[in-house]
Length: 177
Image (cartoon, rainbow, N blue to C red; front, side, top):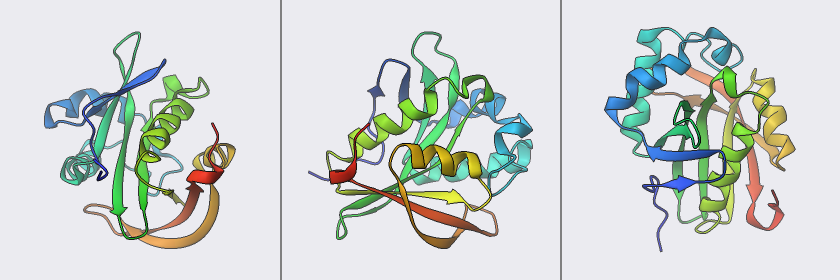
């Protein structure tokens, strides 16, 4: 069975994921328009509409991006995506994740990663995460769920200049959340 980058529905007790659609732009931008969301990300200007539009276009083109909604309120929480599926190495990457500040420290990011990892580990043995070199919040958070830094890489985001990212990895046999 091959990995589906964009399953049509994933849900847990806090959030549900839906394939990102072009019609989701305004709702997602409302979350992304806060500069605090991006202050440690590789492109801290993504709160600006034009910059976010480029990011959003890349998300749609990836065919692996999700809109994340709160199960109880149906409010938009943020977004994440699967990409770089490599059947030969049995791996996938999770990234481009952001969560609105109203959801910080409340378990939403952890619930998102847990759901995405559990789905991925049905198909692959290894999950990678690209995290900006300056994004200490995300580096700490990913370490808390067992990911280990294995490398550094220049990542070219859709429509942007390359940025230094750290590669973190979780192997299926080491995963427990």
